[in-house]
Amino acid sequence: MTNQVIPAATILLLRDQPAFEVLMIERHANIAFAGGALVFPGGRIAKGDYDPAWADRVSGFGAIAEEQRAPRIAAIREAFEESGILLAMREGEGAYIGDEHAQSLTLQRKIVEDDDAKFLDLIKAEQLVLACDQLHLFARWAPPAQVLHRRFDTWFFAAKTPSGQNAREDGNEATDALWTTPSAAVAARDSGERKMIFPTSRNVELLGARQSADAAIAFAGERKIELVQPEIIERDGKKYVTIPDNLGYPIIEETLETAFRT
Image 1: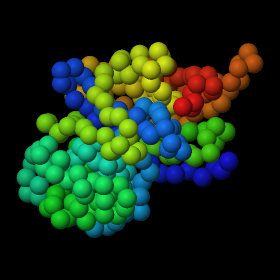
Image 2: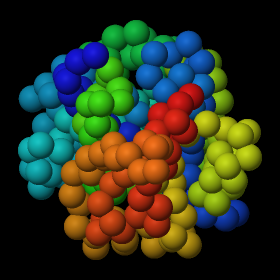
Image 3: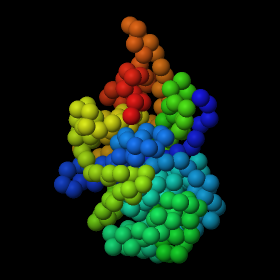
Image 4: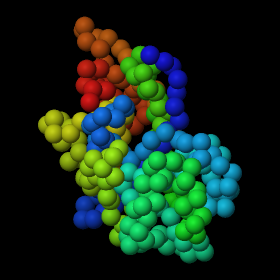
């Protein structure tokens, strides 16, 4: 077991069609971290996400805090890799690309999955600009060293999904992509139909306290974002994963047995 912390980013893609829904994917069962679990699209921040050349391919680049630039790029890239949804617009235009354009990049999507650095090449070739300024910081989590041999310092962003773009799982890292209401995701977890790890569960529950995509994004802009660092406690002979009770989460603890079991 190691205390190494890996920078990562994930995105809560939201829509109101017909109800308030979030996109979640089921990770391949053979993946080392959270295999078989239901998660938001995301993954580790790659070296290419820090490339200074992104300055010309990111909307509002200068207004974004420096520490959040690579995480936002990574979140958009991972969403593209795992779901096919691309938060980007044509250079000089203010609207997201449509589903037909996004679908036409299926081959390039596979290339980017194999080599993250190719994402910048793709965006340049397509004359696109990433809509990083449309991502809203929702949370930031780093799991406890006592539990996981792979620890991810993860930035959670929320964004409205480009109108008309459809999700298509890649069949590699993501074996299923589904739109779900937060309450339905929680119900599927509680029934055992779906699996979730502790950070995903807590953020789905937090999202479920909102009634629409706009309300969730407004909430993200209003709340104070603090690094959430769960702890392991023991009570009555049983171990629990717990977080502070002043961070706004409806549920703050879960048994260690279920918190990270997938």
